[in-house]
Length: 144
Image (cartoon, rainbow, N blue to C red; front, side, top):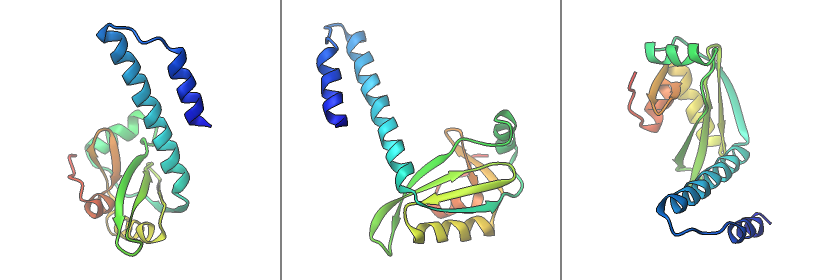
């Protein structure tokens, strides 16, 4: 159904020969695809757990202060050796508690264990804040 709507929208929009119009159309399609992908990843992350947050690094503290105690969610794709598939891990940090959502129970259990070992909220880049244990589990470099 969405494919038909997308094709109809593409047929309705006239393609112009100038580079700026083509760039606009390409960026519009990319952003629409990103929204569709994010919606799919959030729907598939069915398993959830909540843990208490610890202290925050100075950069993470500034991000939390700017957003009134919460930070944007971070989405990661990780490999699950038990399922032998790539799964989704969503981290929703806040000053008081951090919610972890995953599309696989194995990934969720590993993330919860890692987050309980080191609860300090750290900055890993691109405005993402996660517990230090989860950053180490995923293999992300801690920037601040």
